[in-house]
Image (cartoon, rainbow, N blue to C red; front, side, top):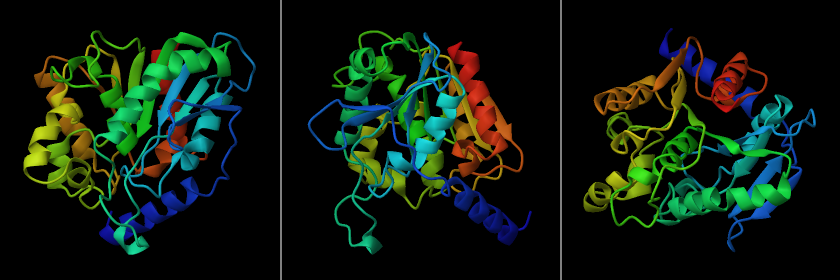
Length: 291
């Protein structure tokens, strides 16, 4: 495929993914005092009791303009597949410079990670109130793009370096992780300038980057012992498949097997687009871990 054809495909896929109206949740709950510290809950549309829970962490390069609303159609899609869904918001970076923003562009250190840790820790209690019929013993975490990094990170908190405020004493009680086109290997992402330098903006430059990477880079937090699958489009122009492959290779070197599903003729956004066949593949990957 020529570069121009690839860009045209990417534009069509992006338009389709963002064409769906936002879907209101069945309930929302705060896990902190900041307006972004909130989780939206979607009950399984078939009304079943004992449904497994899918935690969704949205992407958007950890940048402020991209919030959880763009994945609400995906959350609803999963609810229509019989899952209980928790769609997590978290603090992100400021607006892009051309949008008159200031300060760091991608993410906030340490607030982005504070929030994901706090949301996951609060989840069982919030589920008991918002979705009492869901099975909190069967939780799968999924995330798209930057959210895929956060999903992998949420499952790896027990292997964070000693002294980390986010470290857990034992592995989190998860059935698994399904990471969708994740920014999962920071060295490869930096090399490929994924999302216009987002990783460097998230961690900071030079000394900060080196000091913070061991606490945030999924490829450095292996093995986890948590069942992990990666779904990736082979024609993804936003997060190229080389990033996912580097993470899978790092896992293998650490003695862990990570499943990798490479979808032909699929880019970045069909993975969360309810109108795309790729989204059904994602739901099946989640079901294999959840049920």
